[in-house]
Length: 407
Image (cartoon, rainbow, N blue to C red; front, side):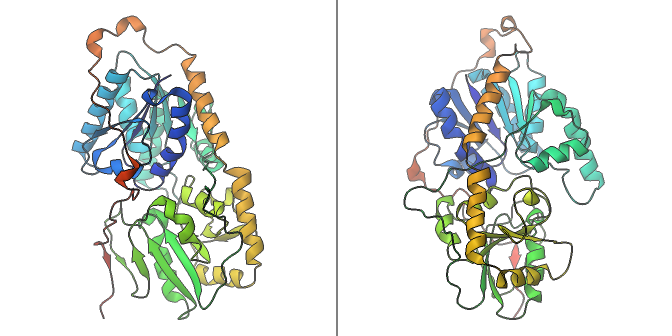
């Protein structure tokens, strides 16, 4: 079986997701039978994937020229490799890929995973209704749609999607390797609570709400560090001078970084299934997270984390008050237990393999006779990644869109 994975952007959790599933698939099908198509400027984000074929296309942003380049690259990759299954990741690749494949004579089976639906937002606007209608229309162009959390299943059910095509395959993650320890108890705290935010500094992740809440706290009650950069939004963030801000860090350094903080904070406005949350649970870290999206499906308030209502003012102060009156060691141990019970990767990887195999048993939409030798393009020299390229998948994480208040 040959699989082609397509991604329009690797920034953030999608690179982590691919790092979890690709090694299993190359072991199952062989390195030559698993191909990735990704933006050229983001190849280093999956530098650890040194055993599979990686093809790239030119992307300058989310603009028309980049989308057309993606569509052309998808078509050429399919013609070169003749995959049995094309797995499309996220909405842009999912939309462009399904449109391109619909116009091809010999069609591979199509698996689509949104990794967070564009219309899954607390407020319903013209834009969310448009995306819902477009995604519902495009479901006919996919053989299977992967939901990465029970929350996403609920979203599709409410939006009246054809659930016969959906498959719930909850995201998972490999456990910590030798030399990394799951921190079952919070490190001994001296002074203010130490809070860490890791992720895109965009509206979806609620970093603006976090900064607003942080300024409402009594002085020195907590310290705050932000790790990440802005990706989607162009609006400026005003960051208090006492908040430490850095760019993205290599993924393998996160367990050690987590140990320096009392809690990981995720005030997202919407989420499909954030892999950063799984990484925090895996390390036994306490999560302070929004009561929106997927979080309520695996966080029990006051037991293995703290749920916050980001629609109210003062939620950060209330969360700190819960921490002050909680058994932190017990909460940390419960977080680790949640990871082991819900997010070990075996079910995810086996679920994807079984899905691919079930699709390949079906006949393709066009017969083999319609594919002529002219449909095949020469295979370019394969790009093989070396771990020597470095692991900072997120680049330098420039913060030129952030502002510090004057004075």
